[in-house]
Amino acid sequence: MTYTFTTNDFLLMVQGAGITFLLTIIAGVIGTFMGFLVGWARTTKNAVFYYSLGAYVDIIRSIPLIIQFVLFNSFMAIAGYPMDPFISGIITLSIYISGYVAEVVKAGIESVPDVTRKAARGLGMTYYQDFFYVVVPIGMRTVFPSWTGLMLGLMKDTSLIAVLGATPPELLRSSQIIINRIQEPLMILLGAGAFYFIMCYVITHFAGRYEKIWQQKRQAAL
Amino acid sequence: MIEIQEVHKSFGSLKVLKGIDLTVEKGEVVCLIGASGSGKSTLLLCINALESINSGKIIVDGIDVHAPQTNQDQLRRKLGIIFQQFNAFPHLTAQQNVALAPRKVLKTPTKYAQALAQEHLAKVGLGDKLDRYPAQLSGGQQQRLAIARALAMEPDYLLLDEVTSALDPELVGEVLDTLRMLAEDGMTMIAVTHEIPFAREVADRVAFFHQGVIHEIGPAKELINNPQQQRTKEFLGNIL
Image 1 (cartoon, rainbow over the protein chains, first blue to last red):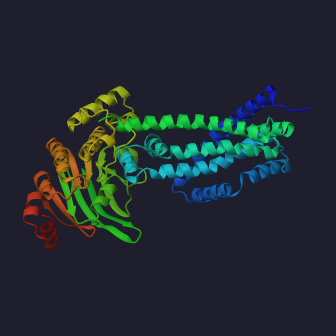
Image 2 (image 1 turned 90 degrees about the horizontal axis):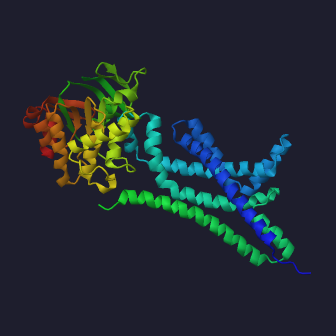
Image 3 (image 1 turned 135 degrees about the vertical axis):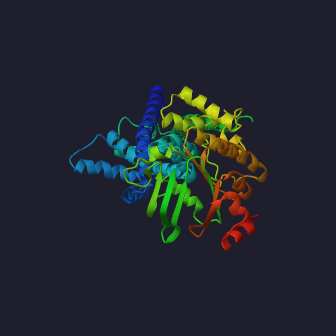
């Protein structure tokens, strides 16, 4: 009896791709929000924030994600709060990406020249008005490509959630399930790669469009 | 009226201002001249509380600028400041640049703020550049945009920090013309400048800064044409 690639296998991969996309979106949104706060707090002149959150960022960025998945999941279980692997995976991914986003946000904020901020404050704007109407829009345009890169990386990192055996399986895990059954690793991995590529392309495409709009605004025909 | 009394300011161990006394009346134009690093620009930043002071007092219309209970954000609306470096908000058009602070700080409805922006941009000769982004403007135009942006808050005072120093020589004139116009309108200005002929023509008084103190101060024409102090003579001799 030969095992072949069935419609159900294809649907499993589509579902996996959907899970991957969902994980990316959820962890991306939560992680970006957390990273924004952490990065922002590190640019204030508060030394406690600067060093404690600096340690947070360093630790997160220095430990392999796969270890963080296992440690967090086990820790919660040992602490008496066993979690669904899927949920604990999302939390770990969010925390993980927040460390990287924090550094990007910090760089973005610091890219805005001091004199521009002084000019804003000189007009009577408060710290928060300056921050939200001047610093964020300017800094965001500067670091948007870096942030996009982080999100693409995050999408591929979601595959590591497999280490927890989270269900439903994301794209890579779905592919492995099919490979185990039909023993056609090359074809299936090629297909999975194509799925990843398409999803990343969607993100890159929309990010690119945003950047173009900003650029056109600045360089509109004289 | 701006009253500056015995103001001292240090950055770490570097003493920048060593006891400045200066009173500027409403409608007066005072130019601050002197070598780089003599503390002129720092004084401007201290006047509108963008820098703190170590001792002394700065009083603007009866309000002690550096007193803890003073709302400095509110105070700065009175004190427009324009810097040497171009600092238009790059993500906004000229009109949006000017309208931003009135909209957010004074809560002026967007429509009125835009009209206000249009009016002030026209005043500085940028009436046809409303929709341009700063990157599409020349240095002189960007500085005039900065002036319009400050004027839109209807400040009682303008603090000018070497506003022509970063400009190509052929663009200096247009910015000075704008300032001349403001002086004629009776705007109170404290201007740090290296444009001595401009100071002589427009300023009521000129103060010569040297190593953190006002070394000599007097009516503009007198001080520039006939300085009394040796240091002032040397400085003017070098620069003219």
